[in-house]
Image (cartoon, rainbow, N blue to C red; front, side):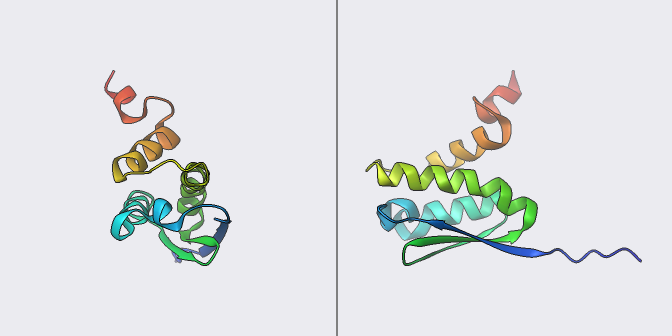
Length: 102
């Protein structure tokens, strides 16, 4: 019988200098959207964003979360649609899912 147990990992990203409300969005909509897309759990705790889930899922979500943190540090607003676009670009390359339709 094959071992189908999925290992859960946690990855902590520093959010120091970034506005938590900008990262999370209204009612944590940005974190909820990234969690839905990447199949990971995201929690803001103090000066850290903690991602947890399967190894592959967390590895795919980290660059998107890091990009969100960097934008927030720069004072840029992030909307839920931006999170989806960042995810598309991270998983499908520049142009995201729109490029796949070509």
